[in-house]
Length: 205
Image 1 (cartoon, rainbow, N blue to C red):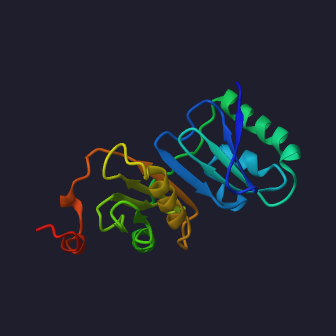
Image 2: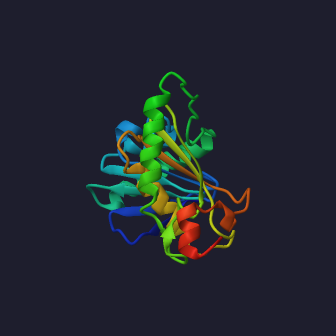
Image 3: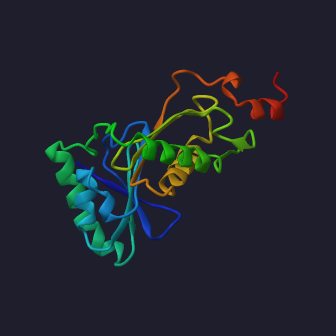
């Protein structure tokens, strides 16, 4: 197994490409060690001194450090990633829904939707919630937030920008322990999915 590394725009973050699927069609942000209980890989990576945060994507793992040099951190990180994939362990352990606390989780879901309005589609200049790009928001009793979203077209050039923006806004909401974004094009987006306010804005009747 050969794992590549790739620099990012942030010198404190480094992208690892294991050459295998990580979270196909999804992104997951884990902001600190206390929130890694549902991810065996995250728990293992946080054992490396200096690891501050993690982000998983379809085929990558981004590690953010708060101390140390990459030349010293990389061997331990590469070893942990290789050991995890060679063992065939899951990236995340799916949690069952706890129906005992619907009020609290519903409130967090609404806060997430409000936060997602900060993500503006750069082509249409309007927020992704009222555009109808958010299909579902769910928060389980452990604070794992799952957002299912789409883009206006399958080949949308702003896909990474929108999904990463959605991930960051979701993770910023109080009560969210982990943020998971799933991209889908089923059903395909259409203007009919816009909110009434968005339709008025775009002159759609």
